[in-house]
Image (tube, rainbow, N blue to C red; front, side):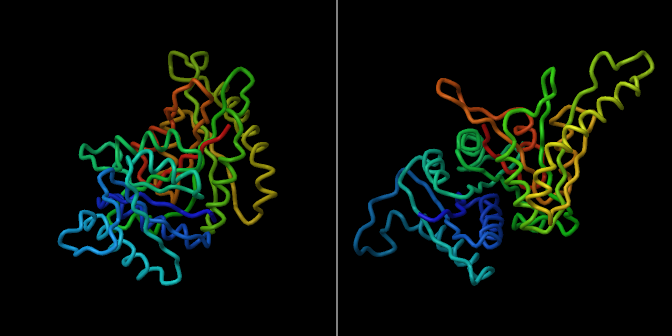
Length: 296
C-alpha cells in the first residue's frame, strides 16, 4: 500500500493534539492520514445492528468525531479510520511498518497516564522500524507550535577516541532536512559534550582546552552537514556545539523549536530495544514535537 501518516487515537487530549499535528504533516507530504484506534475487546463487525447495542459504538464514535474535525480543517486531505482488535502496542508497531511515520500523543513526565501514553508510546518509539513522532498538547490545544517557532533541531552525537559520528546519521539527517524543507525553516544540528576532567581547573575550566574541543566538534559537524547542504540547498543549516551533557544540550536547544529530531539505534537479534538518554530526555522534557528516527 502507499505510505500513510498514522496517528494513534485513544480519546485523550494528547492523542487529539497528535492527530492535528499528523494532519498538518500528511497535508505537507501529500499523504493519506490514518486514524488508528486499537482495542482488544472490539467485537466482530455485524452486518446490521442498532447503535444502542453496538459494542463498538464508542470506538467508532471516537474515530468518526476526530475524522470529521480534521477534515473540516483540511478539506482536501484524505483521512481514513482504522479500528483494530489488538493490543495497542502491537497494533501500532504493525501500523508503523507501512507508514511514512507514526504519530502519538505524549505527556512528558506528568503523572496522569492514558491508553497510548507511558506504557505504550515509549516501547513503540523504541521498537518501531519507522520514525515515531511524539506530540504534546499546547496552550492552543491542537498540538500546533507557537507562532515564534523558527527552526528544526536535530541531535547529533560524537563519541569515542576518534570522535567519529555515532553510527550512520543518514536516516536521521534526511528526515530532519526533509522536515525543515517542508516547513521552510532553518535547521540546527546540536551536539553536546560535558566538560572533560582534564579541562577542569581550580578556578573553573581551562578555556584553551574547551575552545579546542568546540572547534574540533564544529569542524566534524560541518563535514557531516556538507553533503546535506548540497542535497537540500533551500535549507539554511548550521551547527551548534554546547559544553553540557548531550541530553541537556539538546533539550535546551529545542526550546521554541517546531520539531526536535533524535536518533535511536536499530537493535540486532538478542538485544533488547531501548531508547538512549538523549531520546528519553527529549521525550520527557522537550516541549515541542519529538521525532525518534531509527538508524543503523
